[in-house]
Image (tube, rainbow, N blue to C red; front, side, top):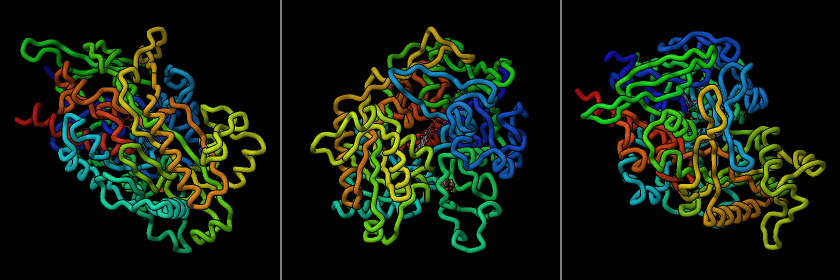
Length: 569
Ligand SMILES: Cc1cc2nc3c(=O)[nH]c(=O)nc-3n(C[C@H](O)[C@H](O)[C@H](O)COP(=O)(O)OP(=O)(O)OC[C@H]3O[C@@H](n4cnc5c(N)ncnc54)[C@H](O)[C@@H]3O)c2cc1C
Ligand code: SF4
């Protein structure tokens, strides 16, 4: 049989880009098929307006100038869920987004494009808590450590820079008696700077002549636009935020073995059945998202890295063998947010400055880890996103109809609107917010199925179902109390709790679990030569830590396992 590549990787996001680079470095010919556009490549100078070329396999095609034309700092330009550059849908902005069904009100915050959802992400790269891996996962924590170390070197991961909002968080946490944590393997509660996939601060930043627009030196400029997709750097591979389009994809292209084809949606995984090997993957069917043309591509091994919603959706739409864990057991950290509003005098007294502008610095640069409960991290974005996410997103309805209980440490809960919202946004420069990530339980009823009545151009659309368990709710309450105590200890005069809906999906994981859908090498139990390398293969919620580093460590390991089994000779 003739192949179009040794390995086809479906999706160029958090995990797929890592698998592609690792395989390419081992001499394997890889074809990456990505449903969305490619920003920062000369072959697609207007990625949302024009079809451009078919594929690129040359590092020289990458251009920081093209990226700077593609990305802006404007919140709506980048984040609008319908028209923004970082939306979930095809490159062509005359065509709508790809739909989903939810139980209740919901949002699945995913990006299509080379880089996937890491185009948005904050770069936070903590490891899982060891105690939720050892004797729980089918592999041990110590087996993951060398892969963590490798990804931490590749990205690289460094401690996040500290600005006033982190100083204030540390001040409050210390005052409450919590410990500053050292090291990366966290087993006890405490606070620490984020391990971040963001380059350290540009050393020239304090020079009077430093000009962000004309600057061509490497390093973060602390402008706080991370959620808009960073374009700060002299070249694509030195962009400050290490989304995979700036980290692993350039490295993959440099191997000379990797071709990336954007605007290509895989609609089916093709299999054949042989006497010796049973059902095995042989390739894929794809659909060009610009002109709708379809085609078939073949490879010895196929890697599904389409993300925790699309990987199970593709499995189901492909008619692959039934498995009660396909799409099931989804976790998402059952988020919540709290904001603390401070007086100028308090800030001067406690940290020696008059404001803590949420907009300045990396978006989420300080964290508090509590194995057994989850995570609290600082959370600062630009004003529009801040107002909508912190004050206008709640399951509770409007705050004035739902006063918090008499013992609550927050004085408001729910949506803030009208004059109150204006008043709070005037206080924006003196507001510090935190996000909560719960160590949520795996529940087989949560996850992805197909809506058999609704199709888009790529097949039946996914239904996303997520309901927290009673113990998830309890853990979130305990984290909210700790967060409010830290904000109060730091001197907050008001604390507002958002009480987010449960179906805000940002850390979607664990829908194709290792050991249940795949073997311990991440090869599908029922389809040989079909591997999974994205968040979906993670066994649980990691205890609360952000998922991408663990996804990337696993993808690095999976690339090794693929080569050992299929390409050793
Ligand atoms: C605002 C925001 C902030 C975040 N911050 C952090 C953070 O700080 N730290 C952290 O760890 N995580 C963070 N995350 C989550 C992080 O982005 C994800 O964990 C990570 O990107 C998931 O990687 P993945 O490989 O599973 O999927 P993705 O990165 O979503 O990649 C999947 C890719 O597959 C493509 N695709 C899908 N279906 C198909 C198909 N059928 N054919 C071809 N291509 C397909 C998609 O277009 C996409 O590019 C954040 C997410 C958001 C939205
Ligand atoms: S704060 Fe740093 S990482 Fe974030 S957008 Fe600015 S330069 Fe990029």
